[in-house]
Image (cartoon, rainbow, N blue to C red; front, side, top):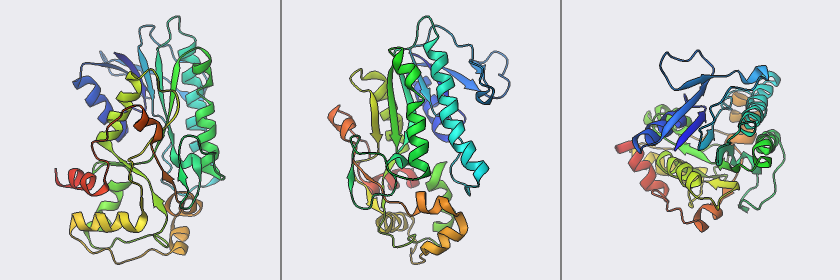
Length: 297
């Protein structure tokens, strides 16, 4: 397949490109910087509102672009988080819809932040959106794909859990602290953390591209959500380090502001119902084996 991708410079995009090209696909990258001479890159500026000039021979598209949420949420940063997702996705989908031969499928990133803080409630693709900034971002993010779906492109809104990788994302940021023996639960530690290994997320994206029966919201999370306390205990065990130092909720709020309540202290216990029913088999359905694979290989 010839696949268009945004967000290709991130740790997920880079891993996806490596996998896709290794398995015989070609990837056209939408980039903000000037394209390298002779590369398969197309420059675009989502903030300009101008549609990028896309080739007509695309089979699919993957949309991963978006401002990092792991920062203190000032009003300006919140605007950047929302606009980078909603406006950029809408612009991309309008460009895809304008093609004389649109691609058959678009896998567009979303997140389980869609559900907000839901305690121990078991959540699926059928569950309603939550309240707060992140649920609003995810609703607008998914709504922005409508120009593509209205054109007949099969759109998968991939509601991703925390992606586990030793080279990027939340886990990579945790590792230095935990390796020093300074890690521990956040708040009560009873909030649920849904997660997915990077290898599985790559497999899920490819699964969604190739399964024509999948469309709309699809949860990308391992079938074994754990509490924050269980997560840090498993991480400490793999690293052979103690996890005795707890960060109180007030400390998380002091350090990270509003982001602490909606990310670090929020509880999302999701189940990948649609992935399982479509036949996807997880390589790492259990946290212990996922962490061992990531941190010892």
